[in-house]
Length: 313
Image (tube, rainbow, N blue to C red):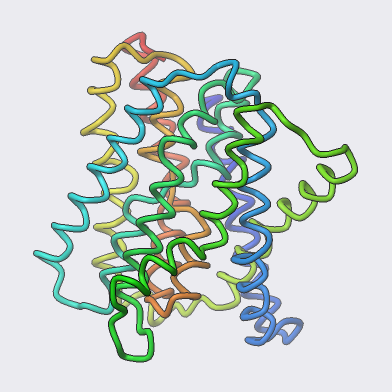
């Protein structure tokens, strides 16, 4: 019950901000121009700041575990490649593929994950190592997939354009800049860190308000089938497939909790920002974010209860 209450407290504010965005748009406080500007700001400034903050505020070198990072990396890589292949094989609507693939694998590891682990263990634990293993792949493949599947003026980009877009992605650049700071335990002066932290804190609320303002219920209902399938994959299937493997490799407590967050937390808000900024199906993306966030308070609690029942968490 404690875990369920905490899950509700973690996910309900997300819904309140989405609803607030819808209300503010409805009464004319914000308009479509605001959401476009907010999306661009979050994509170029706030999300990179959030990633930098999450990676650099913990001493990763002191707790570094190469095997654990490699495990998270391999599981993420296999997940993405298999999902991509199956989507190409079975999904008919080409315009939905990029959004579906991204939202099916890309977890809210940095935004919700650290909060969950910190609440349960009074510290971030192995979450930063999980982020190093998984989040760079999340972003690299998201850029590649969304670039290949996006509108792009009706033309498919060539390999050179795709590679350039990958390395121009602000979130990926933020990860590359963050890693030396994280491993060498370097820090900016306090006033700069506070400024970065303040910018990072604007990422999630602005993105959620924009989702609410842009959410189109009637169009979302028409996409209910891929939304439900992606939500099942995101919250249940991936965790069911790979958590037993993590247990087999001996991961317990904070290590296992970080793997659970990697596999079974809701689709991250940045999926919406990236889909919208690359000409992909942001309506499907927002629908998956809303549904996975709504259901995650139940599914995450169920996974935690199950793992505690068998004595591995």
